[in-house]
Image (cartoon, rainbow, N blue to C red; front, side, top):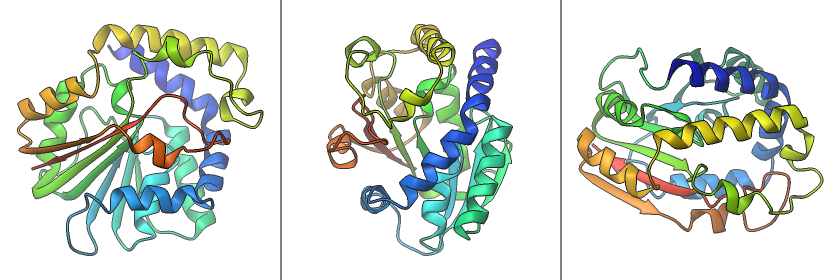
Length: 241
């Protein structure tokens, strides 16, 4: 399992710079308000909330919520991504904390966050059950995990033939890196069951009490095929402690 995590980290270290540039463009686009509208459906009352962005990448969700006045922290296993997040925060003039850390076993104080958020992370975790158990511990009572993800392994074949716009991120990735992405996806499929049904089961086992699933969120976030378009239908899972 550590080998696949090393492969994922190595892959994203090569994409960190271009990924950061695209996330800045997304932050400055209409997508920013779309994401905020989805978050506001699930966020607890109060400001500032203590927010942890798991698998933050170059900090998009952490900075999105920091701009709303929340106390945001982002962690990621890839050091290049964390460097990108810090650079992005400086460009946008926003204050958030970033650390290199494994999201499967974060070394943070129990009950130290009101909100946990993640985007396109959980499908890459070979020990997802363990991750949900660890995340439950991090939440204060009444806190919520808001997870945006997709069944990337299960949908890989169905989405492979979808035509993407010329400025899409995947069009800018080398054939070698795309082949590595496909290989990683195939290997990760061995650890997974159909989602989000599997996630709900794991979250209940981890102790979460109220779980909401929205499988239509992709229609609101990605109604047009632009450079940010995700051809795999994403879902939202909001799980409350």
